[in-house]
Image (cartoon, rainbow, N blue to C red; front, top):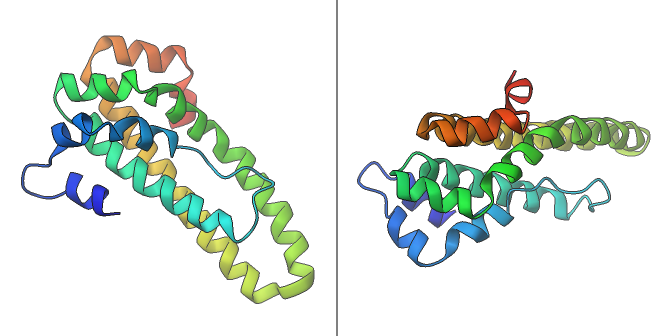
Length: 155
């Protein structure tokens, strides 16, 4: 969270320091939705980490050409596409999980499900923000995104 706050500060963000510290690959690794078998206790933490990393990477992908290249070389393109593709599967899992939970603790789990949906929406919106930054950064990145199927995912 501190890293995301540093990178989104109104004054000049220390993106180069983050790159030099080798943190961009770690941020890219955190761009993953929790797997369906993930426990209900771990899921909120994994979604929160995803949200923080996608928000921080949105700042990196909005940077200079060298900064954008560092994110791309760290594998951000396929991770973003994977994250955007994963939304449908996650929503289906959450619906099944909600139905099961409905039978046990309706109101509490309904609120929890709504919170998970909100977290996923924010993760997806930051992923789309990164995708738009990358598409604007140059034709090479735009073509890679289009070749990877980003356009239908952004719709």
